[in-house]
Image (cartoon, rainbow over all chains, first blue to last red; front, side, top):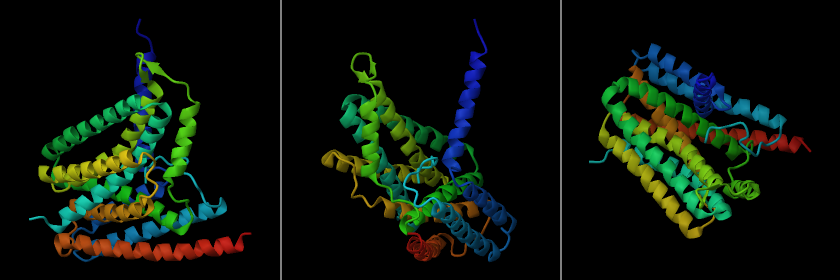
Length: 92
Length: 256
């Protein structure tokens, strides 16, 4: 007899699929993913300018790297050096 | 004639693949030595076959059915996210805020986990745990290589570039596998942390470049600007490493 098991399994599969990609792309650094979306929007808005678009996107990337590293050093200095990638499923 | 962006592409894909292959090899060695080689190899080979099918099917289909600008936006965005993840973690490792990636340590942990597990026998000869660990390890480590190969392969919308990217990955995996087979222990001497720093730089540069091209940004000097971008990101990375290294040293001096 068909039961509610099949939709449940499908739902679980879909959930796992999205969780996998979320962990893979966002991991423990949601700021990075969000920052890249912001850079994409800025590049699109300034695409007509041959000077502003390249300069602003490069500056934004540098700011994003600096901010992310600074943010991680604040967390890590409170918990000493972190020696594992616990909770981080990105492979970097 | 081979242009400089093809050479950079080959180096980036080969380096990224070598790093992932080193990590996958550690899992395969731990599984093979503790649980037996047959099931471990079967798991690894099945995972490699799955990855090859994904590259062949998805890569080719995307080239034919998705417009180039859309591919560049998606590919560039994904590569930029990957690149920044690799780069920020590499900076944290170089400055001491994150412990360096240690294959020996990972190998020992895998061996300890696998040694305690019961032998799971399938059809008389196979060890289901060894098969599953090996399959999962190769598939997960390989997935990022697949994303990079497809990404780099698609950015110019040509089958040739997809072939070059796939070839770079194959060469790197073959070299690391051969070395692993000869030494039969985790490749602790591979300068993984420096390689990750280099790959992080390259992925960031290619990601930003293609994402920009996808939305219509006109990079000055065309493809040559890739080298200028690489120099800018690399110098900034060196500056950040120097600064945060000092921050880390100051913190360790203050804390008893």
